[in-house]
Amino acid sequence: MHLRVLVFVVAGAALLAACDFEGGDPVQHALRDAAAARQAAALKTTEEEQAAAAKRAAPAEDDELSRLITSRRRAVEDTRALLAATTDPALKAQLASDLKAEEARLQVLEGRHMASATAHDAGR
Image (cartoon, rainbow, N blue to C red; front, side, top):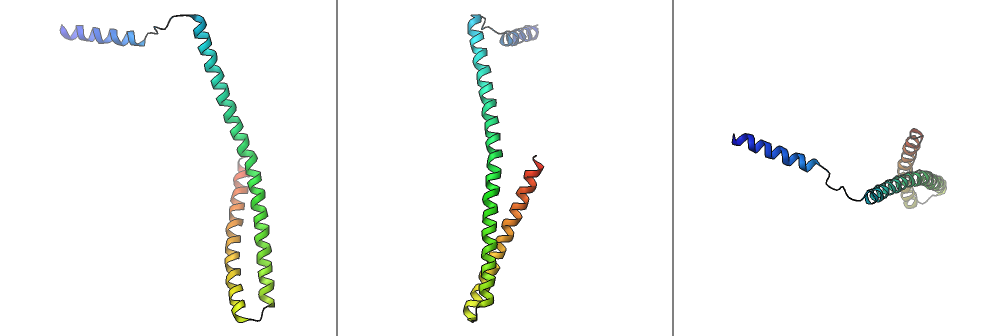
């Protein structure tokens, strides 16, 4: 018997907790709903602006990366030309070392550029 009363009281409390006691002024409800709608619209607009900014930034990064790759290629070509024209063994060794390092950096940048281009094309 006590168990039935306890279950009844708990069920009643749960039912009351689920009820909306706000009631109140319909104007306040309308104002609250309008504010929530404005906030949702502002959030959506902000997300759209951030997505558009990210799309605009990607080509700019690609342009910068392309310019850097062009510069590195020029450095590799200049180093090769100087290496071919140099007779000093110490300078030749230094240039060979520099050329190897510059070619490695160029390969890394070209790999990133290709990956970026592939990812950009996949996003279209």
